[in-house]
Image 1 (spheres, rainbow, N blue to C red):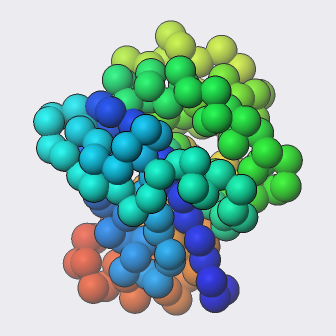
Image 2: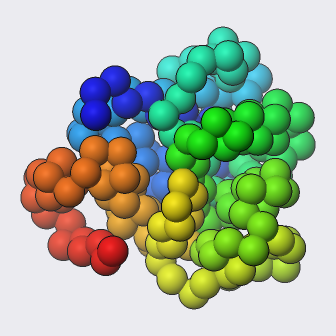
Length: 188
């Protein structure tokens, strides 16, 4: 698949390991992975590491994306949930049948948007009380149709490689994994 475009919205308090791993691994695979800040391009993560995003969210809301991916971080997710554009973005994207992914606390966004009703997902254990509509699995990564979820920062590499496999297929996934020497094996 050529011309793979992935949007990664970042809000203050995002989980740095997850965001950087997702962006890096997707770009290694050849995706146009675009980070977007909600209000500004300089965004501070949960451990006070600042990243400059590629764009502002408002500048790309009307673009078509192959996939949208949400890194976690509790305060980052709270800030995403407080932004009315995010739930609309998720719902519109999913109504078109496009892939969506979230890791750590971010599956809360998918749950609140109503796209994971009665579907299996994984989420950081501390976030389970905030999930109401989904079936929570105790797995590092859950790949369920058009929805991929990851449990935590420790699963960031497996999660990111699962995204590569979904977007580009087995050969590209193997190439990227070989280059990373991650030792991650993804079951299907």
